[in-house]
Image (tube, rainbow, N blue to C red):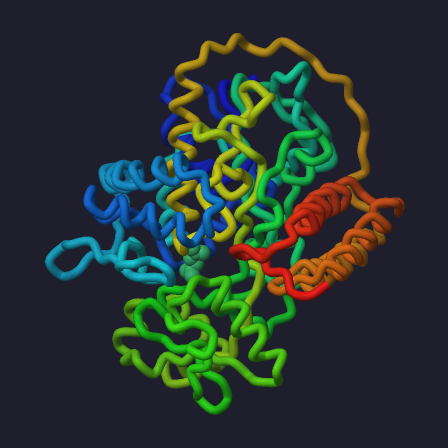
Length: 478
Ligand code: SIN
């Protein structure tokens, strides 16, 4: 029995735990070792209004990226609170990168009208933040726990049902916060942690909890995809923000054929341009020749070392790139306090949630910010409530998490999602994807695959409902 259960140990879950009063009993559940989360892999940084005067412009850039589908109230909350959460992190001792005079360094990423991205450890912002939050979180954290159900009755959430080491048990809490991240592992190529497999979105779908904006799946344009695993290596947007260029085998900066902003066009435009150029038979590379080696090594140390280890003599060598799935704009629908409608005491925060801040396309580096702002607000909201200790007990029903053939189905699903529910979509292919998913749902499959499939089905159905291209949902032909 806890005051709070937090499902997920990325930025949203950990920062939520830091904002809970010390006398509360808090449990964080992590499916795998705690660093296997998207926060850990985030390179670029935390977008923030630079000062009060920059708020309208940050709001405007966010709304423009979202292609008219953001919730303006949520966006205003995001930007207005950005200064507060950044100050709070700094006051708690977190160190963003600074110049020699001690001023914060802001970088620029695509579709931002000015440099406003804070970073840490050069290109290791996520890793630094994650380590800092883990070190400072007072909560009890348990790894290797799979949340398999939410204990909900009559519109009230009482806790979660979990599996750990083959044992199933129920854990009760006054407040449950879902902070389990996105859906990367549904796609054949993605930049996400390997654990990010749409479990709770799938569970929400099975439980009749509303998912929103599920057709809006974001693809990152600059990813090194030549590796065996589905998880691919990201080359941060900040590289382009600071001067890296996208070229083809003839060294031509072909992005300008597609958009006058070239490398700094929004990432859906850049992803589509690269995808099309590759389909026409070209090879595409990220070129760092605008950087000196000294600057590159200091500013992008993770990328420098990773690619030197892979045999690329960066910044002198170009790196072959492709787009890959990166971020889920949609998710479990919440209000601007992270509350899940129609289920009292249940909250969703971070990438698993759809607060409405991203609309049809997320502005670069607004995701870590969203995790910070809305986790803090969710906790603020719980502190205004007076919840009695839950005393319900729920009937147990045994489940089989995995079956031997699941792995084949999982790979089939990934390839369907990549080919038919990807960067450029056709109605006919979306229909085929739906049929194939429904076919797999009829097979004898394990529970975890069932969750993946039910989330994938929501994505495809949402995509089928939207006839026109908008933001990251791009429809071409029948
Ligand atoms: C990046 O570093 O390019 C990713 C940042 C983001 O996804 O916002």
